[in-house]
Image 1 (cartoon, rainbow, N blue to C red):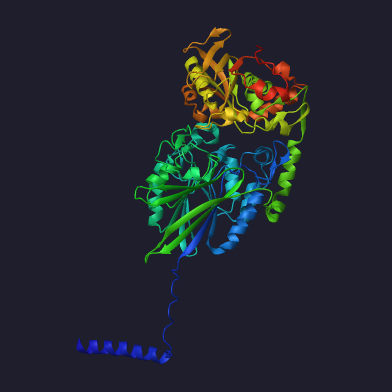
Image 2: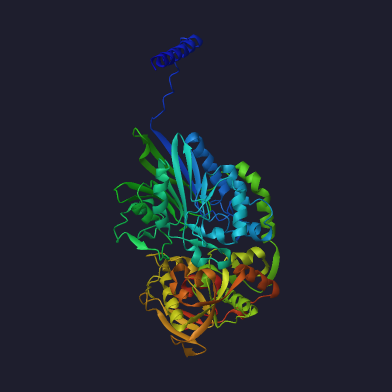
Length: 609
């Protein structure tokens, strides 16, 4: 044993001598020290682009300097140049639907690479969270776009019905400036309420808050230094004051006097709750509510301040977040944060590369919507003059819905629609496809539902939340100021009905404004059964009209309502507003005459006193 040990030592020593003979006398290289100096990360965000690339309104056929990814691209490149190695660009959904550009390249010609993929690839997005409107054209169109994008589409709470597994990538981890950033993607679960069932076959949409609680710790454990939630969902409340004022978004969210409820579906807008209840989240990049939110500051359960921002819609703004990060000896962490919005206007040039890459898509879409499809004998006015009286345009849309339902074998007793935009009307004379699309700008489909008189009565009463309580002798100076402000109600949540006789007294408080409700001259009973034509958004309870979910769905169309509008106009030339207009609705006080009669002439359905 002793001889063996000596031999062993000898061999080791000989090996060491041989190694020494083969080496030089230089000391081993000193490792390059890791730079742990403080640094600034830049997050840039777009949201709710709704296929707006060019500064152009396809529905009016006019330029709009305050929209479009081509102009946002200029801002992106300017900001990225200031901090090139430490910048990430993220989108938070509703990207492939919303303008005729999106409609054309989803339903008319889906063969080319999607124009949004083309433009967004040029800008080098790090990730995109899914929006509810991503599902409007079905999963084949969505998956094609997904395959064309050079960035992941994130949706942690979109799960497969069969086994609850992930249907989309839940999050990404990316390193910039040596800092590992985790981006979790979430979408409002309202998709399940609003979307046609065959567009979301095999999918479920889980609660965003509970999903974030599950994934954020996993991301932190995987090494995320900075944790970003990119969510197509916004605050569930809005400021009592002006929502366009940056200061109003900095009010204490816990103070009920400073905030008012938005009328959400359960879980529809949970961004604030995620900030408050999920530890380790640093930033929420939000969307869906179409609001310019430069900065909200929220405290989580540990007392840490969480930043929230949202860049409005249609490429009107770029959100810009700055995170100052420091090294604590073990990992990076956010020390301070700030955010602001950069507005798009005519001082911002279109990015030449994005414009060049997408020009042919734009030109094709313009030619498509400019096709002539019909004629009218006089204009069908939209906007406020079309909403504040029983108008021909609303009646026309209801007739279209009634005809489509009857053609499908589901004749209805009544129909409800809304006028979505304030800037359009069907012109007198020749009508283009653009004109027809302009009066129905959303990709809604048509439902026929069975409801009872109680559901109808509650829906009609809720309808009046669109207006503030008015004084007939002292009306607001401008027609838009007759709308409610606490909360503001979207124009698409003011419905106009056919097939019933009803009226409102807006001098009464909300909840007691319906003056009468009759069907074929008889008062409607709560247990009376009706068939109603209504779009899928409203039929699914959208806009806070949860009572419709108590009804029974009888039929859902494959085509969009606006396609029915275009088809009807092709088949009914020389449409007359007077012939279409049926006076079945009254509003007191009269809001049409003081605001619009001088410029537009008297309305057929205003009661002469």
